[in-house]
Length: 76
Image (tube, rainbow, N blue to C red; front, side):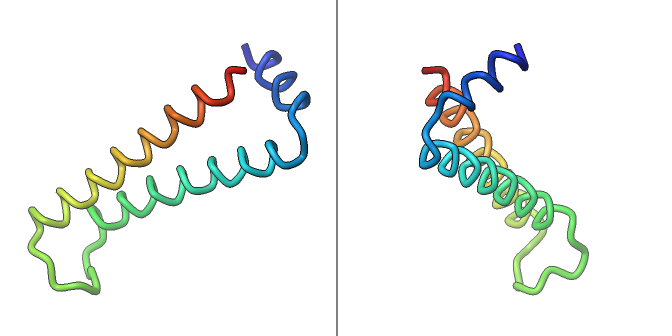
């Protein structure tokens, strides 16, 4: 499976590889940001804990949706 992913990435143009890397970067960014918002003790914005948890879960869900779309777009 991993070898087919690597071969698929090698077939892509430099522009498509760059966009793939940017997509992975933003997936990680949204996921980590969601975790920070949920677990950070001294959050700089005045938000109640349930709202912080909801916002963090929303960001993690959005990261998951981006990841699924990224995987589906790269199956070509």
